[in-house]
Length: 382
Image (tube, rainbow, N blue to C red; front, side, top):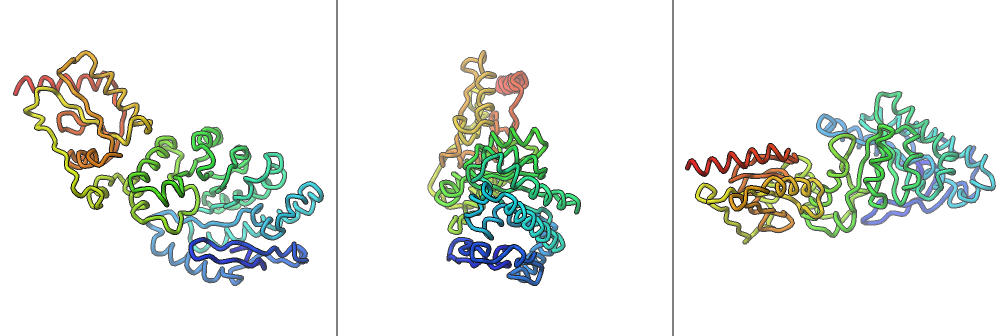
């Protein structure tokens, strides 16, 4: 948006966002020839009108992000790849350009905030191409100023980066955003650890192609669940690693939403993937053993599922053949049918003799033993 409004030409594609193909400062223009875009420049009239409509329609239900081009990526759009040489040969020129791009960023953020967005995301993917030292010199002062402005307006700011920017994550934190969002090139565990030190939340990083584009709904549930297990329940926003591929099946996106909203069972029940699949629940009251059904993604790949299974395995020791436990991995269709028949909505879940006991909570082993003892006593009294 910003680059086009300042004279960059774009190449459009049928299934991808447009890309910048010309660079005004590379073609003879001077920095003094460029002006900070306003609401009447380029496609901003259309974009701002669309933003206002979205905010008016959906703003009371969901958070609306306004995405601006980060100052370094915008500088590269304007100067071209010469910027990488100029950082060494003529750093003052690059800094002047960065100051200009900071002004553009602040003004674009202002326009989006006035249109009603809730969060400003500074999208600066090209920072993954520079060292931490260059980041400190050529990015931090200018990105930091944008976040300072956004916060002064009472709104949060998010720093988006793509590519292997692992070495720059801590420098990004020092720019003082509220959130840092990453793609699958950076381990989510690492980013969570670094950002936690600065009190900054993390967003990401469902795999775009392997999972969202080529995967099944169950693959998407699995990937999202693993991301949520790493991100935790505080300071984490589940999101794709970057732009969702144009051809990603809608069912895959619905699958992720169903997980977030605790509606996996309903989602799976209304899809056709379970046609012809059967699973017969035991008649728990007639069984001699107490039966513990543990509904998981897969305890070998999902950390919460693993710890829940370990709790069950530890708790049943000492009960001998009075207790039997079964792990139902919902990567398998039969296990999904079992989950639906038991009425389980979330994973992982422990069910004892057909009664849901623990939902997405790893139980205390002693308490779980007590629950098993009660179930054994109940059978004896039948």
